[in-house]
Length: 349
Length: 138
Image (cartoon, rainbow over all chains, first blue to last red; front, side):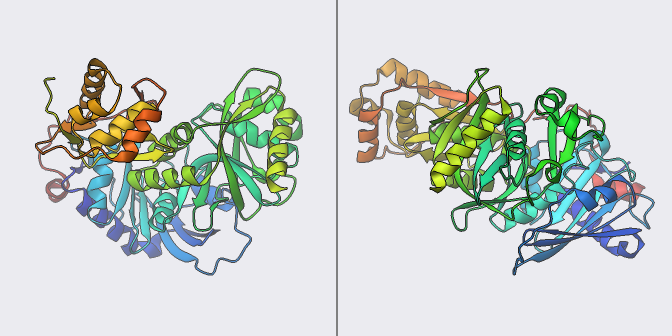
């Protein structure tokens, strides 16, 4: 079994990218996906990931004049001469060391030990490879947000950012909901959608700071644990829902509960840090930017491979651009949605 | 005080931003965040700018023991390192910020999402060669 060290990592990445490009004609399936300012061509095998590419993204509605194209190979042995994935052979593996070593040579990458699952991206040539031991040997979170690291690297190279935040909006204006898992982001987003608000996502959205702060949709999937699913009345509304996912959550799509088509973007007017208060009513009170930054940045940076400093700087700038609030969540979904709707309506008027 | 009088940011992996005078520091190598009180933010900004400890003590009402304890924590966290350099003058805006500060001198660690794997525990690797050599062997 081949082993990769920190020293040989860039060579291995180039070798894998070259191998995938050489085998391009042998990949059985090609999927084309449109995302904001990005057209992705994915070469892969039939199966769960190919299916996911068909429904995991929200296709942008507005024409993006400066859309760039990138190619991703989802590769595994059995496709032409694709090699068996190597294993990590360096005792001192750290996420940051791994990413830094690749970045020194202009590359991006990530390694998931348990599956010998490699992802490499060359942002200059806009070509990437996801190398797996077999067609179905991917982590359980891949189908809900396929190609996420590649999108992260490509957008980061352009000064944009996949941001771990929920969103709600009204008439094109919106809020970002920041916080780690369990803070109440997804439940708040679902409650808002069910009450007529818009959203561009409840987990990862694309943020840029070009003209103020804006958020665009990428992934169409929403998630709810069984308790939230029942509290929101989704058991009845989505009667044909699938089984719980690997996190013990139900997954569904924005379009399943959205009052209208997903907006192409929301102009973000506030950064909110939700927390479940346990009280009857919800409230919105000012919060310090320091606390908002500490809610926004950690999960957005640590759940994404590489680009840590650029993320820290971008989230810092974002936080300084927005008023920040603490959102205490009551226990009634309609009341929560009403509180946010009133907040947005006041801001818009 | 047993530490040198002047300090510097420990490495290029220590990055920080300031929000309305309150500092947030990230250690890129570990993913640990550090949030400072308003007084702590002022002292951090002074120390990270190369201002000597004595100048900070003279320009603020911070007790010497508190300042020493605070600096010890920053050293322990790997945010600061002793600097072999003369102290810089304390900027006027930091003097003003310290005078206006109301919170005790403190720094909080936020490491919920820090890297869990500093050293990969999965592979007890004795393989010294690495990928190209192994590739040839294959």
